[in-house]
Length: 91
Image (tube, rainbow, N blue to C red; front, side, top):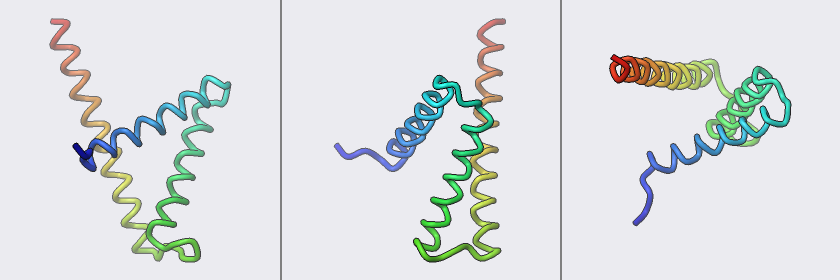
């Protein structure tokens, strides 16, 4: 059975996290790993939107920024839900 886009998405995400953790274990500071991953994401987002030769227009930058913001918000909501569940389990 073929994997869904969501399943592939989470597998890819976890591969990036695994790579970041490997870099951390190699002694690279987490702020540098995070910054490098963000830069790589920006480079790749620009490639997806504009190809190898293209760049993003200001509206394209706004769209990518908004997408990243939405991902941050989703992660924070999930973390809050996990914390609430953990607190509930401890009560």
